[in-house]
Amino acid sequence: MKVQANRKILVVDDEAHIRLLIMQTLEDLEERGVEIFSAQDGREAILIAEQEHPRLVFLDVMMPNVDGLQVCHHIKHKLQFADTYVVILTAQGQAYDRQKSMEAGADKYIAKPFDPDEILLLASSILFDKTDD
Image (cartoon, rainbow, N blue to C red; front, side, top):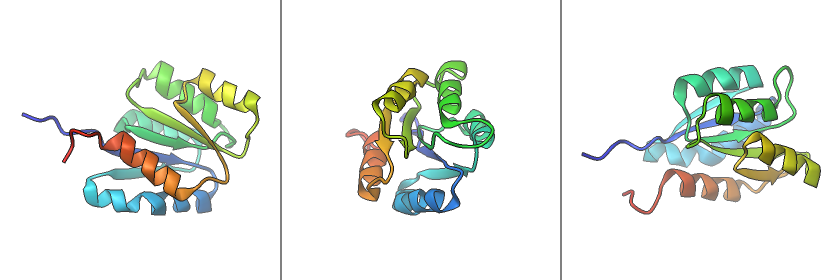
């Protein structure tokens, strides 16, 4: 019996238009069984991550209250969700920022502005491996 793959995405950004852009970019995946959740800050992101255990997280760094690096660290180290792929999406493009993201447990770092096609391709490759239909 084949186990249902985890096809949940969490989009986290305090800017509503960025969240909407990412969610619109990914909406075609919903036809393939992907569930998309969104959070407007780090606290909300942690709550959703704990409840839904997303396979993929697109995460902004600069947010009020709990920043993206703290969320990433929480997902990867406290919750120990090693199977959750975390993509940092940030306007902070310096090498130092990239290093801090990787230290927090991020799997990929993409500087804003990003290419929506790159986001969709990345999500597809993570959620649908070659053994899937």
